[in-house]
Length: 243
Image 1 (tube, rainbow, N blue to C red):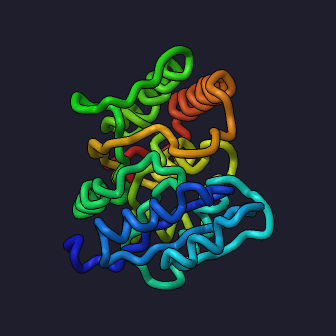
Image 2: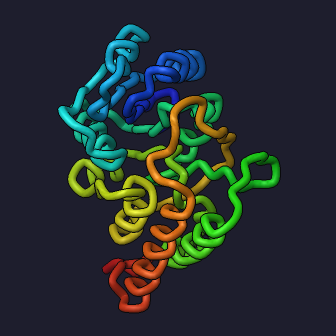
């Protein structure tokens, strides 16, 4: 199925993003006017939901904050129910450039999940210190499981095709970074094809991250050890080895 014939949903999980949500929606509409937009209002206490609806997005409001993983599972349930062929996750804080939507969608022609990577020769994005070291180790572990490169496993700018939508509507981790690292691990264990494509990524426009760099690095290190242990025990089925 070509990109032009896919029924596409751009899913935007949002928690207190009133300062950026309208601009993000406008840019998505500019670059992919054919796509529908769903904002999952993740228990916001500000005007996120009202501004998203005013900008033209469909809005699902959760009664309390469940995190990006829980918000994205809601989006995948919505996509499966409404018969979408593709879901693209876009952050509400302005980090992801909607000009790259075509890149992550085009890759679904031969993949189930396409991850937008910020680590490529033309990228100006920089992550340093312990967090970067942990990301490199995690990348190596997931790439080994995937039998293909995943250079940016914590990137939330990604797309999912029909098989991934069906899987993620049922199995999608809600813990911290579950929407990125955890979901990739689940996809690999179920034999889904994962590819990556270069994208532009910025630092957030407004607000602040939910976790600091040291906490993130420690979590990434723990996740890496868990993935390595799983692969050593044979707790997953690599692509091509399925009976």
